[in-house]
Length: 297
Image 1 (cartoon, rainbow, N blue to C red):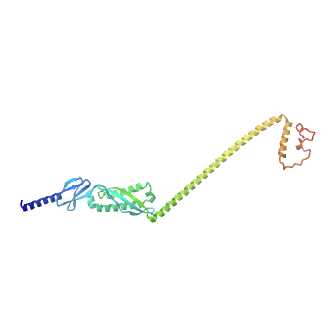
Image 2: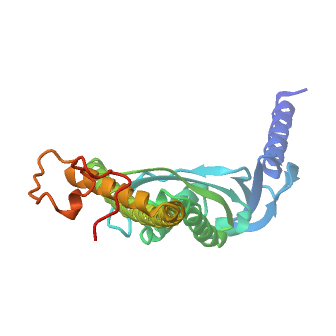
Image 3: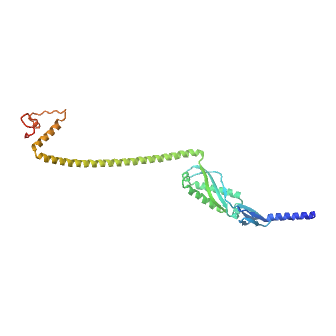
């Protein structure tokens, strides 16, 4: 083979290689392709494998079909209760329509920048109407759901499916942390004082009710005791009356003895009576029997 023929064959092979390289392209399983002709999109190739295009006039742009992460820089946010916090958020999205994505955003780098702006704007708007207590309570799920829906609706017009938006951290600035701590402490102290006051009030009510119940029980017991004593005194009087009716003189003597004991029992009591006083009729002078003597009229 002469040298010119060898050179011609080499040129032809090289041309075939270049033509084949310009005609065929491979779409990986993790990507999707958009065929462009002079910068204008012509068709979307979503199936992985070997595909063809018009050589030299058409180009191919690949877009990842996997979940993509986006992490905006931490942003300061002012809540509705005037507290400032540092929000560290992240998102995950998937390009579902390469054609719309290319027409609106052109590239993944531009898409990341646009999504970052959307996420930050949505976070500031939603958290701007929320409080720190709400963000730290179970209401956090509702807040995050609202941010997720808002970002998803905004990203949908770019051919993007926003899978999730989450807050990784929500930190208070150092200057605010101490004031918030003091505020929370004062609120807890206030709640503690209110609970103690309610407890003291309930304790007073319980004590008052217990005292009232005690007085009622004592009053009923004293009433029952008075009734019992009255009934017993009545029975005793009846018994005494029946017994003394059998001997009136002994009854008079017994009553006089009780009177002597009650009147003369105290050592510091002095009586000045005449010897003939009827009170001393049972203090015999040797002529009258103490028991058998009849009482003087």
